[in-house]
Length: 113
Length: 267
Ligand SMILES: [Zn+2]
Image (cartoon, rainbow over all chains, first blue to last red; front, side, top):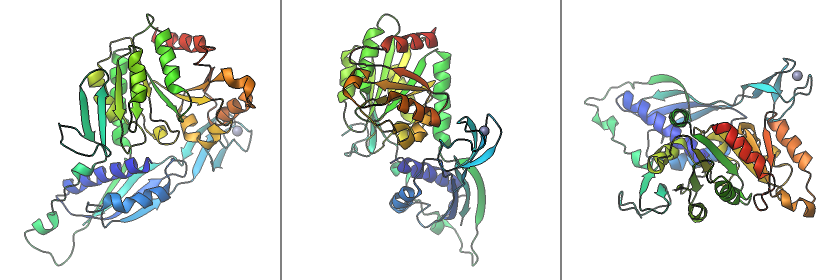
């Protein structure tokens, strides 16, 4: 259940930002969790409320972007969408690729009030 | 229960213990102790009729702190020429036997240190301690993986010599440890031939982030319907750069190549 570590890290960053602002609570938090990032969004949501209770994120709205997986084939240069990290190039069948998106695991922004 | 922090619950805290000694560290990594809410809202001297909102564009990696500490660890290892390997597997892959055998066979070749990750027990660390290698036990409690801060704290207790090998046995699961860089030079995923050939496809993140794949318990192959080629093909689909070692930690078969590989890395 590494989603707990993810939630804890998010909370630590959020607390730091609120402290830098001289206090307040977070109204909205925007996250990017790529489809290939290895995080179960349902698990994260499941533990979220318990983890965030009585914290700066206790009443925050969560907005989650889920970028799709995209890669560039290292053999023929085709750019293609991937559902799985082991999808092969539709152009030439190669498994060698550079992942362009889908591995994001970021806090994009916070709204503090 | 730890006398240092007086916390009665080992379940939520991390305990790091040097085997064969009383030295240990106990801390909470789940952030619960930092959740003091100081009520800044009511501390405002005057109430505004309109509310202030600040929008902060962070664009910050959620695991950025782990990554940073992992890089500190990596710098430490590189400066002292310590080869650090993060070993990941499912329970039952024979990882501890693999470690025991490696330590015993490499005596006189290299100093080996071990960090053992486990949620609750120290059974594996006790087995390692018997081989004579200095070992640290990290009990992660609720945590299902090691992180770079745990390793950083362990290094202070372990105090490894230059030109040595540090083997980290991560908590036994193929999901969570994939996301947490510990600062290792190499990540090795161990699978045994008693597991399915589709393991790499079921746990692609782990195979994708590993450099080495150790296929263990090959001595059992004659008794099993296991397609070794298929396992390798599946693993190569996920990670075409993966390097394989086929071994039996029980019989010693194939271990020589693994030792050659380690020696080449610390030479
Ligand atoms: Zn291609």
